[in-house]
Length: 168
Image (cartoon, rainbow, N blue to C red; front, side, top):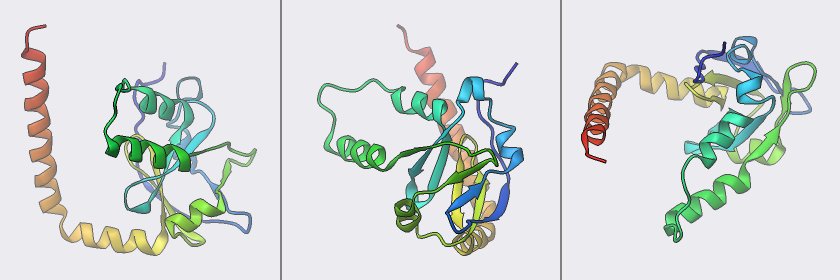
Protein backbone atom coordinates (compact mmCIF):
# COMPACT_ATOMS: atom_id res chain seq x y z
CA UNK A 1 0.00 0.00 0.00
CA UNK A 2 1.34 3.43 -0.92
CA UNK A 3 1.67 6.25 1.59
CA UNK A 4 -0.88 9.05 1.32
CA UNK A 5 1.62 11.88 0.87
CA UNK A 6 4.69 12.47 -1.24
CA UNK A 7 7.97 12.71 0.60
CA UNK A 8 10.88 13.62 -1.66
CA UNK A 9 14.34 14.35 -0.25
CA UNK A 10 17.97 14.63 -1.27
CA UNK A 11 20.12 16.52 -3.75
CA UNK A 12 21.34 15.03 -7.02
CA UNK A 13 23.82 16.58 -9.44
CA UNK A 14 23.09 16.07 -13.12
CA UNK A 15 23.88 17.50 -16.52
CA UNK A 16 21.37 18.36 -19.21
CA UNK A 17 22.32 16.68 -22.46
CA UNK A 18 22.35 18.42 -25.85
CA UNK A 19 18.59 17.78 -26.21
CA UNK A 20 17.81 19.29 -22.77
CA UNK A 21 17.02 15.88 -21.30
CA UNK A 22 17.30 15.45 -17.56
CA UNK A 23 17.56 12.08 -15.81
CA UNK A 24 15.20 11.81 -12.85
CA UNK A 25 17.04 10.15 -9.95
CA UNK A 26 15.95 6.61 -9.06
CA UNK A 27 15.50 7.42 -5.38
CA UNK A 28 13.05 10.19 -6.23
CA UNK A 29 11.17 8.08 -8.80
CA UNK A 30 10.82 5.27 -6.25
CA UNK A 31 9.06 7.68 -3.87
CA UNK A 32 6.31 8.36 -6.42
CA UNK A 33 3.43 5.91 -6.79
CA UNK A 34 2.14 5.98 -10.39
CA UNK A 35 -1.31 4.62 -9.48
CA UNK A 36 -1.79 7.51 -7.04
CA UNK A 37 0.49 10.28 -8.34
CA UNK A 38 0.41 9.66 -12.10
CA UNK A 39 3.00 8.69 -14.65
CA UNK A 40 3.99 12.11 -15.98
CA UNK A 41 5.03 15.41 -14.44
CA UNK A 42 4.09 19.07 -14.48
CA UNK A 43 6.98 21.48 -14.77
CA UNK A 44 6.21 24.88 -13.23
CA UNK A 45 8.15 28.08 -12.72
CA UNK A 46 8.13 28.58 -8.98
CA UNK A 47 9.33 31.20 -6.52
CA UNK A 48 12.70 32.78 -7.36
CA UNK A 49 12.37 31.34 -10.89
CA UNK A 50 13.18 27.85 -9.64
CA UNK A 51 11.70 25.03 -11.72
CA UNK A 52 9.29 22.87 -9.75
CA UNK A 53 8.49 19.35 -10.89
CA UNK A 54 5.30 17.71 -9.59
CA UNK A 55 3.87 14.27 -10.38
CA UNK A 56 0.94 15.04 -12.69
CA UNK A 57 -1.99 13.67 -10.68
CA UNK A 58 -0.60 15.15 -7.48
CA UNK A 59 -0.31 18.57 -9.16
CA UNK A 60 -3.86 18.32 -10.49
CA UNK A 61 -5.13 17.62 -6.95
CA UNK A 62 -3.18 20.63 -5.60
CA UNK A 63 -4.36 22.92 -8.37
CA UNK A 64 -7.99 21.88 -8.15
CA UNK A 65 -8.13 21.56 -4.35
CA UNK A 66 -9.38 25.07 -3.67
CA UNK A 67 -12.87 26.07 -4.70
CA UNK A 68 -12.83 28.96 -7.16
CA UNK A 69 -14.54 32.11 -6.03
CA UNK A 70 -17.16 33.92 -8.06
CA UNK A 71 -15.05 37.08 -8.10
CA UNK A 72 -11.39 36.19 -7.51
CA UNK A 73 -8.93 38.88 -6.46
CA UNK A 74 -6.73 40.48 -9.11
CA UNK A 75 -3.70 38.87 -7.45
CA UNK A 76 -5.26 35.41 -7.68
CA UNK A 77 -6.16 35.96 -11.33
CA UNK A 78 -2.58 37.06 -12.08
CA UNK A 79 -1.09 34.15 -10.13
CA UNK A 80 -3.25 31.53 -11.83
CA UNK A 81 -2.87 33.08 -15.28
CA UNK A 82 0.93 33.06 -15.13
CA UNK A 83 1.29 29.79 -13.23
CA UNK A 84 -0.97 27.71 -15.44
CA UNK A 85 0.09 29.38 -18.70
CA UNK A 86 3.73 28.49 -18.02
CA UNK A 87 3.09 25.02 -16.58
CA UNK A 88 3.80 22.19 -18.99
CA UNK A 89 3.19 18.46 -18.87
CA UNK A 90 6.20 16.19 -19.41
CA UNK A 91 6.52 12.43 -19.76
CA UNK A 92 9.49 10.26 -18.87
CA UNK A 93 11.19 8.59 -21.81
CA UNK A 94 12.21 4.90 -21.56
CA UNK A 95 15.54 6.01 -20.01
CA UNK A 96 13.74 7.91 -17.19
CA UNK A 97 14.55 11.33 -18.62
CA UNK A 98 12.41 14.41 -19.10
CA UNK A 99 13.00 16.86 -21.93
CA UNK A 100 12.92 20.37 -20.52
CA UNK A 101 11.45 23.03 -22.83
CA UNK A 102 14.01 25.64 -23.93
CA UNK A 103 11.76 28.52 -22.81
CA UNK A 104 11.55 27.12 -19.27
CA UNK A 105 15.33 26.66 -19.15
CA UNK A 106 15.76 30.27 -20.27
CA UNK A 107 13.16 31.64 -17.85
CA UNK A 108 14.77 29.80 -14.94
CA UNK A 109 18.27 30.82 -16.01
CA UNK A 110 19.72 27.34 -15.71
CA UNK A 111 22.76 26.03 -17.55
CA UNK A 112 23.77 22.48 -18.40
CA UNK A 113 24.90 21.61 -14.86
CA UNK A 114 21.89 21.28 -12.60
CA UNK A 115 20.93 19.99 -9.19
CA UNK A 116 17.65 18.18 -8.65
CA UNK A 117 16.46 18.38 -5.06
CA UNK A 118 13.64 16.69 -3.23
CA UNK A 119 11.57 19.46 -1.62
CA UNK A 120 9.03 17.51 0.42
CA UNK A 121 6.13 17.13 -2.04
CA UNK A 122 7.91 18.06 -5.27
CA UNK A 123 11.29 18.25 -6.93
CA UNK A 124 13.14 21.42 -7.81
CA UNK A 125 15.62 21.89 -10.62
CA UNK A 126 18.34 24.43 -9.88
CA UNK A 127 21.30 25.71 -11.82
CA UNK A 128 24.23 24.05 -10.02
CA UNK A 129 26.08 27.30 -9.28
CA UNK A 130 22.93 29.06 -8.06
CA UNK A 131 22.09 26.09 -5.80
CA UNK A 132 25.61 26.05 -4.34
CA UNK A 133 25.39 29.77 -3.53
CA UNK A 134 21.85 29.48 -2.14
CA UNK A 135 22.83 26.53 0.04
CA UNK A 136 26.02 28.20 1.32
CA UNK A 137 24.04 31.29 2.36
CA UNK A 138 21.36 29.20 4.08
CA UNK A 139 23.80 26.91 5.87
CA UNK A 140 25.37 29.98 7.45
CA UNK A 141 21.92 30.78 8.86
CA UNK A 142 20.87 27.20 9.59
CA UNK A 143 20.25 27.64 13.33
CA UNK A 144 18.24 30.80 12.72
CA UNK A 145 16.18 29.02 10.03
CA UNK A 146 15.49 26.09 12.38
CA UNK A 147 14.13 28.48 14.99
CA UNK A 148 11.96 30.28 12.42
CA UNK A 149 10.64 26.90 11.28
CA UNK A 150 9.78 25.94 14.86
CA UNK A 151 7.94 29.22 15.36
CA UNK A 152 5.99 28.77 12.09
CA UNK A 153 5.03 25.20 13.06
CA UNK A 154 3.88 26.33 16.50
CA UNK A 155 1.80 29.13 14.97
CA UNK A 156 0.26 26.73 12.43
CA UNK A 157 -0.51 24.25 15.19
CA UNK A 158 -2.33 26.94 17.18
CA UNK A 159 -4.33 27.95 14.09
CA UNK A 160 -5.27 24.32 13.38
CA UNK A 161 -6.39 23.78 16.98
CA UNK A 162 -8.43 26.99 16.96
CA UNK A 163 -10.21 26.08 13.73
CA UNK A 164 -10.97 22.56 14.94
CA UNK A 165 -12.46 23.91 18.20
CA UNK A 166 -14.92 26.24 16.44
CA UNK A 167 -18.51 25.07 16.56
CA UNK A 168 -19.91 23.91 13.21
